[in-house]
Length: 449
Ligand SMILES: [Zn+2]
Image: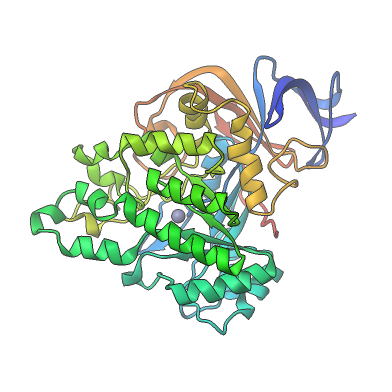
C-alpha cells in the first residue's frame, strides 16, 4: 500500500508517453505500474503527468540599485508551485567584499521560507586569480555552478578575460560548471555613447545598444576559453540567432557547452518597445526580432539549446517608473508561474516542439546541467516525488491579477492559454490543487549538489 497514488494518467517522459500509475511512499516515487492502490489516490484520467518543472534561473529577493526584485523566496516559490515548478535554482548575491562560501551561507538565510526545493548558482563578483580555493569551498557547501557576467562593467559585475581564464581552469579541475551572461560590454558602451538625448528617451534604444552581435561575440570568446581550459560552461538566456549559431559552432567542435533560452525570447519581440508601456519590458538581453524567435525554436529542436529557464526577476510597475531613459530602469521580467503553461500552449500545441520535449527542456535537462539528476527531473523510481498534473483541455487567459507572483503586471497579459496546471506535488505533498496554493512556508529544502 502506497501513501499516495497518482492514478490513470498519461505519464509524459522524454522517451515517450505511457499510461501508468505512480506510487509514492513518503517523499519518493517508489513504483510505476498499473492498478496501484494507495491510502490516498488522485484520479488523473485525461490528464498529463509530468516530472516537476525545474526553473534553473530565478532571482528572488535580488538587490538591484537600491531596490529588490518584488518576489521573495516565499511568494516566488509559492507562485512557482502554482505553475508546476517544484525546484528552482536561484543565485547567491556576490560582492568584492565577500567570498563565494560566505555568499552561500548568507543566501541560505534569505531563502529559508521557500515552499519548494532550491539550490544556488554561486555569483562570482570581484573574484581574482589566486582565490581558487573559494570554488573548492563552495563545492563542499553543495554549490557546483558559478555565474559570471561579461557585461555590467559599470556596476562592477563584469569578469574580464583574465578572470574567466583562471576561474574556468579552477572550475574544470573541480568538475564544476561556469554559467555566463554573454554580452560584449565594450560594444554596448560604444553604442550607448553614440546615442542622442532623444534616443536615450526611447525604449527601442535598449535593443539597439545591446544588439545580437554583442551576444554572439561574447559567446564566441567564452566558448574559446571553455575550449582551452576544458571547463563545462552553460550559456544563460540565449536570445538571438547569432547567439544560437555561436553555441552551435562551439558544440560542433566538441566544447563542453550547454545553453538555455527564456520564455521572453520565445514569446515576445522588440515590437513591445513601441508600446505605451514599453518600459515595463526592460530586460537584458533585450528582446529581439521575429527571426530570432524562430531561430531559438529551431535551436531547441536541433539540440543547440538544452533547456528553457525563466530568468524570473520581477519588478512592479512602481519599481519600473519611467524616469526619462531606458538606462534608468531595473532590468528583469516575471515568469516562473507561466513557464509551463506558455511552453505547452505556444510551444507544443503550435508545433514548435513535441510533447515529450517538454519534460526534457523543463525537467531532465535542467536537472542534468545542475547535477540534480536523477534525484530531480524525472518520474523514475527512487526520485523525489516532484510531479505536475497538467490538464491539456483547460482554457484560460493570462491576467496578472489572477497569478500568484508578487507583481502587478504580466508581459503576457491577455494571452489565451490552452492547458493548465491542475495539481503540483512536491516531495510527496500536494502544494497546489483546485486553483489554490497549499504551499507551506519553509518546507522547501536547500538541495546540496
Ligand atoms: Zn538572470
